[in-house]
Image 1 (cartoon, helix red, strand yellow):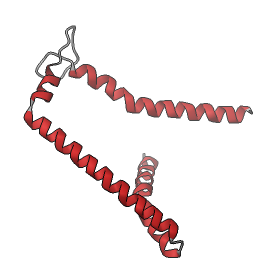
Image 2 (cartoon, rainbow, N blue to C red; image 1 turned 90 degrees about the horizontal axis):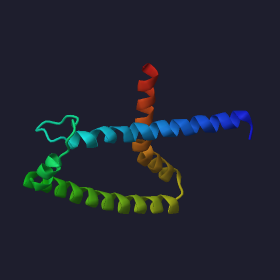
Image 3 (spheres, rainbow, N blue to C red; image 1 turned 30 degrees about the horizontal axis):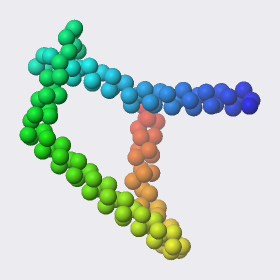
Image 4 (cartoon, rainbow, N blue to C red; image 1 turned 90 degrees about the vertical axis):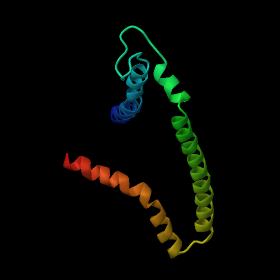
Length: 124
């Protein structure tokens, strides 16, 4: 492996670690803050408490909300999986110009957000 390729792989590896840190580091702050014994969220200063978790899991309003969100998420995932699979099979079986246009339209939600982000970062 040449030095240029090794440098590229090291850069890619560093970029991946930076992305992972960006996603994980907020959790390393949120969990200790949630273990404070005070009524408001702050960093714990010596003693730990599960007070906020007890309030969360003993509140009927929160449990109902979590249950409804889980049901909605499950049904949404099921419907999206079935429709996506059927559409992919149909577009694969029908090879025509119209199927290519439909495939492009179906991919727009995956394509547009990175383009918008790239334009925003370019302006920065």
